[in-house]
Length: 260
Image (cartoon, rainbow, N blue to C red; front, side, top):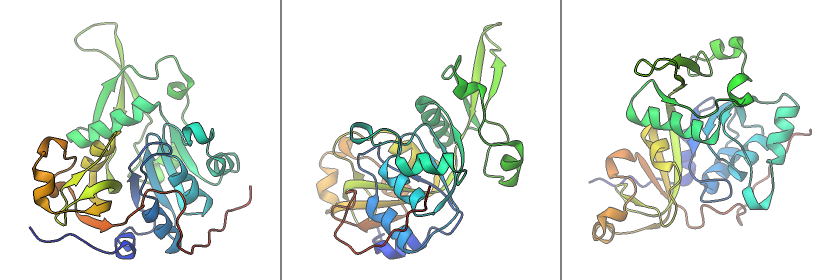
């Protein structure tokens, strides 16, 4: 197969202002941070982010003024902090449009998108204000056709009368960017350790970009095919970025954090 290798700056240039985007990883783990920094260097604006458990990746994008709207479960760096400070300031200051779901609710939405379904039923969020309240207004939803016209729907089960279910809308993004430990030039990938929801995020995206610690021969990954993560046909571009997951890098970058 042909090589899908491209440079980091070229990969980031594929994501235009206003694009819908999900980023792989979980809280403080295995985010495509080098790609995030490159989006900031290129001064992306009005990004529309979808995520279940983002952390420093989203926090930095929010602080740099790159984000207009988000849908998520929470944004935090787990053991290293509570709620992301720039995320908190953006919400409290009305600098970002947002909608929240439970963690499992967001994963269910990604799963629906990966399966090609318009929604999936669940019981998550019953009895909580996450279900009862919507942050996005009807006008905000109507202003962007990529946003579901309503947060969720409650129905009665057609098979068990009296049982209520929540229908959660599917997520479809224009881009998904993941960081992995190993990839081949043609896009076969491997994650060492927890994969979180990266695979279903990838399968509900139009374009998947993978940043990789190592570029390895295809024969190496085919020796243990059961350990591979995404097949080549699911990956559009591959970028070789050693240490691409680290929160700080030795490259020169100036980030202006908007005042609270």
